[in-house]
Every structure is written in structure tokens, then in C-alpha cells.
Image (cartoon, rainbow, N blue to C red; front, side, top):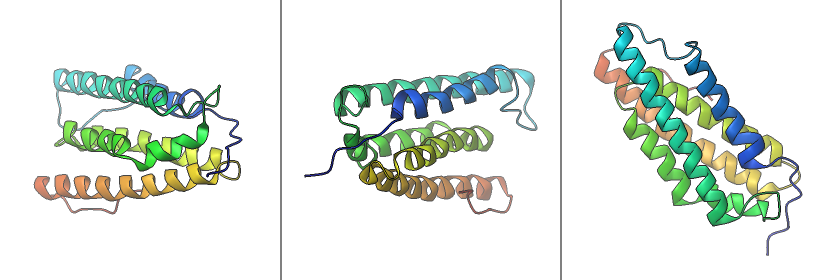
Length: 167
């Protein structure tokens, strides 16, 4: 049986939601998603699409917390490892990649949010909950691999040279 976590930061409230809220605020303020070559109306539609997608990610993370009971507030935080290692998290990533296909600026923004969530999770749970730290790092590796493939495919289609994904 896995050792109980002694996490001090709640995944949903202290890690995921602040990263998502920050991205939403940047979009709302017009500081994010200023793609070159797009008109004002296209940019507005893209921002609305990304805002909706990030809201959907929030909803799915909230639902996962209920299903897996990984809250630090009366739940079992070590169950976050099962979520991050399981198909539900991977489906969130795949859905982002599908929804933002052909929109490299938007895809990069949302992938960065997911990377930040996973990096913060690994750092926050490290030492107090090694199974969650390990699951977050592995999920980050899978995210980087899938994102790198998607971004390289988009760059190849647009005719620009592919770059290695940021880590």
C-alpha cells in the first residue's frame, strides 16, 4: 500500500486553477494570443475558443477531483498519481491537441499552462508525496512528447522549420 501524502498544496485550488486563471486573465487583457497575420475578428474568435477550452479543462479537473478524491481537504492526495497516470489526464491533453490543431500560438499557450500545472505539481508534492511527484513528471514527459509532435506537424504544414518543444 502506498504511503499517505502529506501535501500542503491542493492540486486543484492551489496549483491548477491559479495557472488557468492567469492564462485566462492574460487572454482577457489582450496580452496573450496576438497571432501574426490574423485579423481582429479572427483573433477574437481564437481567444474565445481558447477561453472555452481552458474552462473545459477546469471543469474536467474538478470532475476528476471528485472521481479520484485527491483533494488535500478530506481526500487522499496520493490518488492524484492515479489520475495523472491514467487515461483521463491523457485524454485532456489529446483533446487540447485536437481542438487547437492549426493554431500554433493557441496550442503553445495551452500546452504551457498544462506544463506549468505539471511542473508545479511535481515541485509541490516532491518530498511529501513521491508517487504524485513521479506521476507528474511522467505526465510532463508524455505531454512534451505529444506537444512536440503536434507543433512539429503544424510547423511542417506551414512550411517553417520545426523546433524542439520547450521543457
